[in-house]
Amino acid sequence: MKFFVLTLSLLAALPAAADNLYRWVDETGRVHYSDQPPPPKTKNAIQRSYKGSVIESGDSYGLRQAKERFPVILYTSNCGPACEMGQQLLDKRGIPYSTKDVENNADTQKALRELTGNLRIPTLVVGSQKLTGFEDSQWNSALDAAGYPKTPAPNSPKPKAAQTENKLPPPSSAAPR
Image (tube, rainbow, N blue to C red; front, side, top):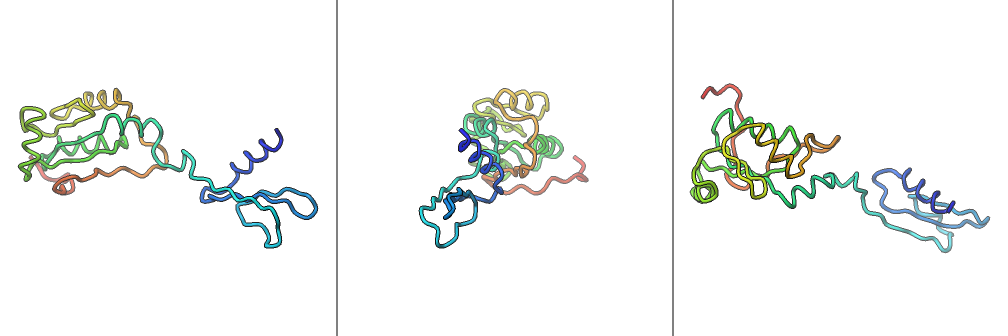
């Protein structure tokens, strides 16, 4: 039992970048654990490799599950405040999403028309649920129901839209519509 507790405490104390753990017994019989290789004359050294922990892997379990079961796609263009607010809401919540620009792409326009019956943008697709137009309470409800977190994980990189078609210009705050 002491061995198990000692091993766990040593693993917890290792720096985040350490992916190897060494165990060896010195000539006096003392057992050593380290993230550094043992001295060259050491016999019976054991090296174990460990992959990153869940904490180091970036996305939380809930976010990974939501991304897998309910991918988010934002159909948009340079449509002004509604599209900008939609993107800001997704970014603020840390939602990974892909965008499809319908302004200059006939295939995307056709896909959106088949999906919703119109070309109204922004359109948010969360799994199989389609939301046309920006209404923050509806978008938040759909994202909540899909299991997406309300806020991004601490210290997580801010997700950027995975541009799937026609890169969008950056949102402009000064352009009146």
